[in-house]
Image (cartoon, rainbow, N blue to C red; front, side, top):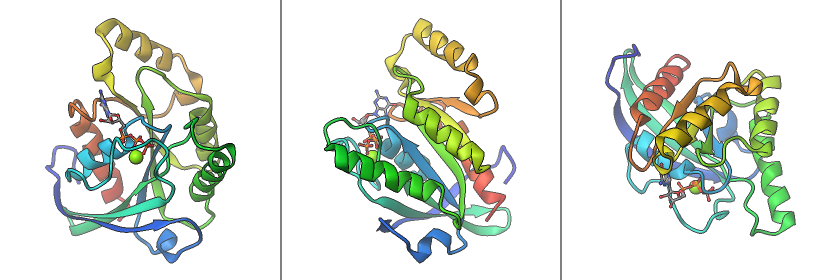
Length: 210
Ligand SMILES: Nc1nc2c(ncn2[C@@H]2O[C@H](COP(=O)(O)OP(=O)(O)OP(=O)(O)O)[C@@H](O)[C@H]2O)c(=O)[nH]1
Ligand SMILES: [Mg+2]
């Protein structure tokens, strides 16, 4: 798909929630995973990118998503219909679930991200523009880097910042050597600000592997 081409999504459907070893992890369909702290807007963003309101549940009790949810997205590309799984992961860092549950979820996330055989092609790491990169985010970036996985960094909820605050956040991230070579996007999922750029880049990446 060339960069100025329109995306035509033809189908989106929920396939299943996964908590352990399953064939869907390596069935040959490329995967793009959405991860981040609880409440950063993962599910809201997925709905925008997949162009389906309400496909993924949003704004419910934080920490509710416990499974690794697979959505099959099909679109028209240059070489006909192409497909990928958009994968919604539990959010991390939610304080109000038990320590045991928090650790179990953390383990499930890293199990998925580091699975030795998988078709995980791209990881979209989402952070809240008001908080910046946290320790868990940094650890995940390091893990993914060790395994040579490609990452996009999405700074969401920029509608909550004024110009000065946005400038400051951009500067802070620019000076952060950990993410120097990671593409980054400053967006608002709710206002659909700059989400088309991110959508284009994700579909371009996924088109080139599927
Ligand atoms: N102001 C603003 N609010 C947003 C934006 N994106 C998401 N939200 C809100 O943030 C809250 C959480 O959004 P979700 O999409 O459910 O977040 P999540 O990361 O999927 O949360 P968990 O599934 O609990 O990990 C909701 O109330 C959304 O409406 C944004 O760009 N701007
Ligand atoms: Mg969610």
